[in-house]
Length: 102
Image 1 (cartoon, one colour):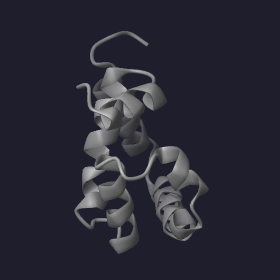
Image 2: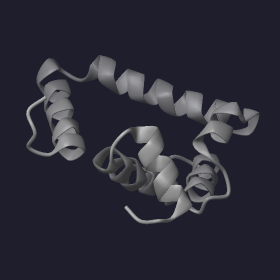
Image 3: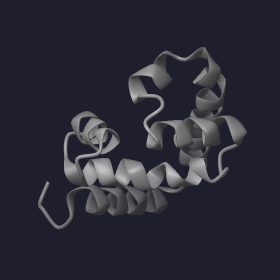
């Protein structure tokens, strides 16, 4: 990460440089419109330092789109088989922690 205030906030929030970088990469999907216009705006604003995650969490403007995204995620998880869920967990852990043993 850099001396950029957004990068520093992400690292503080995420707890590690690796996790912060993954959060930043993950925000690319909504930023590019993959989760609708409201979340695209939110992701752009976070990545460009116009709003903090704390302010996003407090914002009524983003509450409904975030809840819908969470519901979509929960529906996917309920429908995914155990093998797919385990694969996703392992992939996420590797991206967050590298080859370190957990």
